[in-house]
Length: 354
Ligand code: NAD
Ligand code: IPM
Ligand code: MN
Image (cartoon, rainbow, N blue to C red; front, top):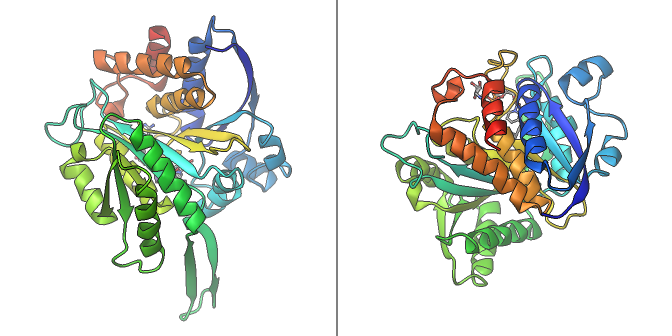
């Protein structure tokens, strides 16, 4: 444990983001007690409410301000009152792209004490990490619409895949795999149908694989890997994939781990030129927002990931260890996990366990 002061931005955002972020903050405060670590918190009031008031999702100098932090702790972005593509493209995706957070690291584990919707699975069966490309691919934002509203309207949405972008994410995937006990990497492709981008993806992945003979490397088409996550998740360890594929596969991974409220995601700029950003993988969940029943585990786990990235592995372990022990006891669970506890009750249980 190294004594240090960190400047961290809190971007709670919208819907249940505002409910799960306080849970994560409470866990952090408990975990850094008596460690010499201090945190200067700054709340960024950005998001859909901010948009409805000011006509923009973030401050005009938002990127410059956000760049001054050591890390950004995010809840969720999105509201039924604001078109999703505006909310996402005026805040979330530009942050990931401009801050070169090209790695999205999303662990998916069936934690002891939780029940998978898949029959007869235990925590030994579901322990995967998705290494998702987070800055280009299907999410490049390139394209346009013409003849809008007419019968011959055309929309073009272009995937942008660069050799550099593929090479660095696949290498990151191999690095993660090489440090895990099973040392397996599955590359999600679709080179049968996507004959330009995914053929290049496979070629680059094959080249990078040569540097990691100790890692068992396989390619699966993304449809087959989606099925495999359901039928035989134990055969998967680390999955490296494109932006959109990773989005879909991690919702499956979190769901089979018990709930969409479980999995966290670290948006990492490995070079540390810019702050990295940590968030649960779920969204703002308008259907349950305001009820106080959102599962805070994804957000708390994301807080743990943030301290791992900041070089404070002990804080990570303290937070995640407490989560694991609370869930293993099985007495405090939110409704998505089959319990009756509120967000605050589950957060309080984690805090007192820490
Ligand atoms: P969602 O993840 O918000 O919700 C999907 C379903 O999962 C809902 O039924 C919801 O109640 C449930 N759920 C999600 N998180 C939960 C939690 N912590 N505890 C209990 N149940 C939980 O996805 P959606 O409905 O597709 O999207 C809603 C909004 O969120 C949209 O505006 C979307 O664009 C946005 N979104 C944002 C992010 C992000 O900020 N990173 C991620 C996904 C979706
Ligand atoms: C996620 C979300 C985002 C994504 C949306 C809100 C753009 O679904 O973080 O998983 O697709 O990356
Ligand atoms: Mn998603």
